Length: 178
Image 1 (tube, rainbow, N blue to C red):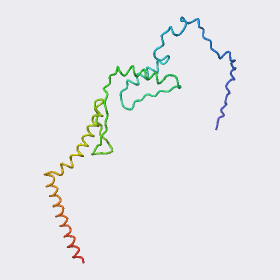
Image 2: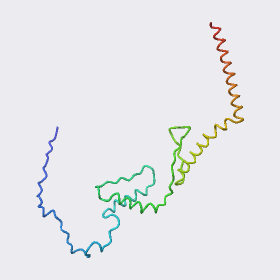
Image 3: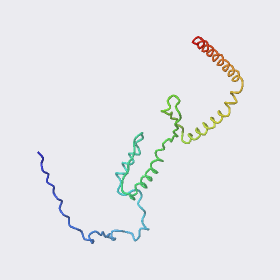
Image 4: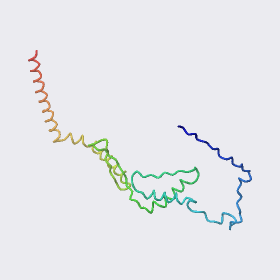
């Protein structure tokens, strides 16, 4: 059994006249002649709860925690946050680090994380680049000297012997089948 829902209309509001929409400030409440003689307000006005929540969010140090801020454009959200962060971050004196991911030769899908003091990651990159250049330049020269030359000749000779042995076995089997 379906019950009928009765929809009620909201009452019609009384239309306002344009004179009622205009707000007039009572200037007698001010104790100054011009705004040049007063000091500007520091910080955000009327956002105490939002700023308190933002400070709590900034204090949470852990992966996966984020701060989401929403509001109308032009209300000073970005400026407020920048000023708040400028004020809070020097107090925290966090130890900054450089994070560098390098290849994990045992498991290419899971790179290895290296953590360096702030600014040292770039030095590591430059040192690694210089090391690779050095190795590329010097390894071929080293491999052309003794004892590598005699070892290479020995390997080639051993390979040649094993290749000849395989070929002679193959030829014997081939002659048997013909």
